[in-house]
Length: 511
Ligand SMILES: Cc1cc2nc3c(=O)[nH]c(=O)nc-3n(C[C@H](O)[C@H](O)[C@H](O)COP(=O)(O)OP(=O)(O)OC[C@H]3O[C@@H](n4cnc5c(N)ncnc54)[C@H](O)[C@@H]3O)c2cc1C
Image (cartoon, rainbow, N blue to C red):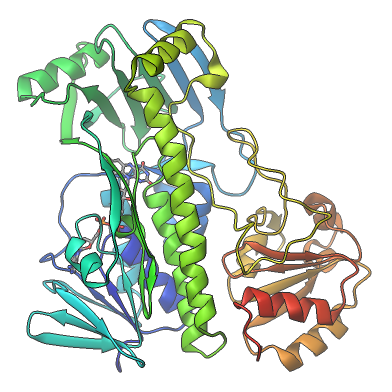
């Protein structure tokens, strides 16, 4: 392959996803990782959210959704009493979430990478520094210098040296609370499709335990333990027995962890973007780690591809920081609130937690707000529409009605899923009163970025798609390559769509 166009630092799941998404845009990618190869180590992430499964499907890793276990019910207990349970509605073609080990996810992503000639992976390449000038970035791997027009740093939490070399601070907190996680294989009839959260069970008093079903009859058990406790094999066995009784089990992996809440001060420094754990760390309750790292990768990939092709200017890359940094701050806010409930730090917080649990006040029990896409409502790329204001974050588990900035609902169509039509460039969806041919003609003359124009009625053949989306007959909807709605334009004409596209390209004047 001739020289890379993007160097991705780190072959963790975020770097892998980024490489695949970049290659999907025809970009040549060099992935550098300091490790000697893919380890067989244990699993961190297990719970992957629908919109992330959608991104992986687009990247050629649809097997994650296929192999993952789509659990359906979440039960919450206080001591020996079930407080409440809720079930996932399957609203779209993909499950709301699946459980699958990070190890297996990385294997699936590796297989997709192996089939992609535009990606080269080099192990044993520790990047010790990055320097940049007006035309590109140089990655320093000891004496070796590797160069590309752009770099995407997905080097995980420990990439302090790289962050520092870029002048990026990573402020926040490391918490004293400690957790023990075990992956066990056991036959537990009735538990296969249920996630269970126990507050203060008799067998872990004053602390909580989370149990997640995973594929292949395995379970992830996550205990909150005393901050200074070093569990022995005997302790681990006793803890597992307290949950599963005398049934046979196999311990596949175990680890202890503490969590961090940190966000990088910048996610773009010139020609270098930062993504995933390298840019943000949050407590795992709510599964907002990898589930936000992958959207970072997607956001970065289309913007880097547009910059490389001359379809957009530096403002589009700067919008990567604006959008994904805001997403990271939201995740921090949500997970901090969760941790105040799970691991209260003051007498007032402890009292409140006890009152909420003893009173069975289900709406106030916070065991983690499950990851959801960030909505780019305030992004500079989004054209606001006063008749469709952002209604605010809906209650837990409820999708947000479509509005500028919000992600497009996924709807099955005769030729695929609606979002699949949006992945190759901008997509303009037109109501019945708009002349698709006229829009396509005008937009085709002035917009150089890839763009498709489709009539909503023609897309599903029944005319019901407009109704499902709530799109008016004179409206044009501009959809970004990451399926977020960039604009909803009433009384649309081609000129108003051109203006919205220009804005969605970061105000690129020569669209
Ligand atoms: C207990 C636990 C449970 C979790 N559960 C979930 C969950 O259910 N859902 C979820 O979404 N998230 C979860 N997470 C978070 C998830 O594991 C992380 O967000 C994810 O691993 C981040 O991936 P990454 O690619 O950004 O970083 P990493 O996986 O850390 O990968 C970084 C890569 O960069 C390489 N690297 C580092 N420095 C350099 C360098 N200088 N040069 C070259 N290579 C370098 C490393 O070798 C590594 O391969 C969980 C985390 C924990 C700890």
